[in-house]
Image (cartoon, rainbow, N blue to C red; front, side, top):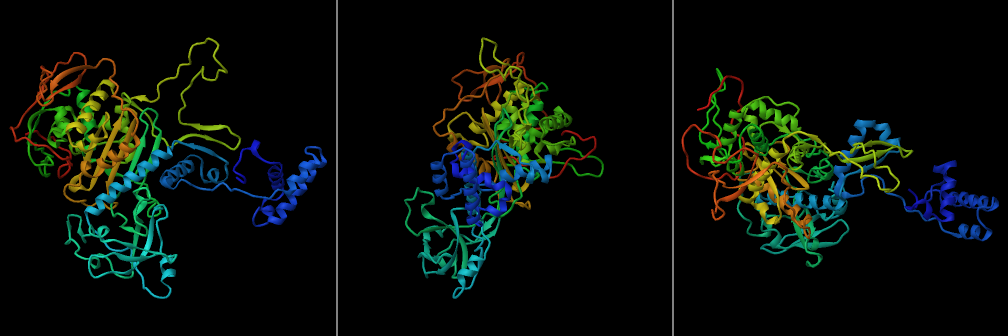
Length: 631
C-alpha cells in the first residue's frame, strides 16, 4: 500500500515507518504530515538500535534515508475493464454485503485476461463506430462561445475519461472550401481536422436514410462547435502527421461483448458498452434482449436429439399457424421473402431459414425446445409458443454465451464466472469457483503414487454427439452461411448470427474449440438499426476482428469429435451419400445406426424458389394458445 513492495524487499527505514503507523495512521501521513512521520519513523529506528535489532551504523543510514512512498492505486486501474470491475463489485455485494466489500479485507482473484480485454474492447468499439459512421453525422457534442473564457467553458464540459485517445476540442476556424478545420484544446494547444476526415460526415436523417454528402468543411462544422477528435497517429504507430486529428462521435448504438472459456466458465473479457463514463449500465449482463436467429441452434439441437439428423429433409415453404379463436393467423416469413423448397437441416440452419425452423419446432414440439432452452440456462422458463423458436424470448448476452459453451464443451454446462477465488483478511478461502474435490492434489511430492483424479467440470446437459452435430453445422454457417465474413480468420471456427424484427437487435455468438465469444449490438431503447444491419453485417465483423488479432501466431485446432460419431461424406443440399469429387460434398456427423439415405423427410406445402438469407429475424406477431394447425 505504501511502498509497492513485498515484505522481504523493505529497507530498515521503510519497515520502521510501517511500524510507526499503528499508533495513529492519520497523524503520520507521509505527505500531509511529513515532518511528524519522519520524526516518528526515526524514533522507531532508534528503538530498533537500542533493542539490538540493528547496528548504530544501520540506524544512522536509515535515519538519513528519505521517505518516498509509492501508493497502490485504489479502484479499477485497468481502464479497459471498468465494466468488468463493476460487475465483480456487484457480485461481492450480493454475496457478502456492502460492509464486507468496504471493510472486510477481501482479496478477490478475477478471471480477467488484460490482453484479451484490451483486444475485445478495441474490436467492439471499432465495430459499432463503423455502424455509426454508416448512418451519418449527428452534429457536435455542444457549442460554446469563443472569446474570453472559452477554455473555462470547455474545461467544465463532462468527458469520457475511458476514451483515453479522444480529446474534446473546440472549432476555431472553418475555411470556405474543402480545407482543414482549425481546432483548439483546453491547454491552449491546437491542431486541424483535414477534409479527408470530414468527408464521411453526411447528415443523419434517421436510421434508414442520410442527407447529402458534404461539399465543403462548413457543411460539417462551424466555429464554436465542441467535438471529439483523435490524433491521426493513434492508429498507425505514431507515423501520422503532427497536430492532425480525425473527427469522432460517440455512437448512438451500443451493445456488449463477452469472451468465455467454455470448459471452465471463466469470463476472460467483458465489454458492457462503448464507454463506462457515458453509461454504467452493463449490456452484457443486465440488458434483456430478444435473440432472434441466435436461438435457432437450440431448436435444431432438440430435433437432433429426437430422431433427426443433419441430413434430414425439411420443407422451406409457406407456414401458417392458427393461433386460436379470435386471434389472427400467424404467417412467419424468411428474411429474404423467398423459399428454398425441400432442404436438409444443415442448410436450413446455415442459411438461417425461419420457415424450416418453425416447421421443425412444430414437428418436434415446442415443449422439447423450451426444455432445451431452460436446461441450457438461456431462460428460467419458456412458454411453448412457436414464436420463441425464432428468438422472441428475452435473455442476456451472458446467459446466451454461456449456453453456447455447452455445444463446445461436449454437452456439459458450466457456470460463467468473473471470480476465481475470494480470500478473507486472514487468507482463508471463502469462495472458489472450481470447487471440485481432488483427494490426491495436496501431496508434497511424487512417490510413485497414481496421478490424482479430477472430475470433469460442469453438469451433463446435452448428448455430446448432439452437441458436436450442432457444432459441425455452425461451422457451416461460417463456411457457407450467414457468417462468411468470419472465414478470413483462417482457423476452425463456428458460430451463429441473430437478428430480430426490423433489425432492432444484431447478434453473433462464435467459438473455437477453446473460446466462446458473444456479441450483441442495438439501441438501448430498441428501434430499427436500418435495413441490412443484421447480425452477419454488424456483430460478426467484431468477432472476426477480435479473433484475428487474438489468434495471430497461434495454430488453429479442429473441433473435437466425441466417441460414437460417424463421419460420412454426403451432399450438403440433398443429404445423400456422395463421392469426394462432388462439389457439394461435406463430411457429416451421424450417430450410430442412422443412415443419410433413410432419413425421414418432414414435408408438406409447396415447392418454392431457391435463395439465401443474409440473416433471419423472427416473423411478425406472436403465437398464442389454441389448437393451431400446419398448412
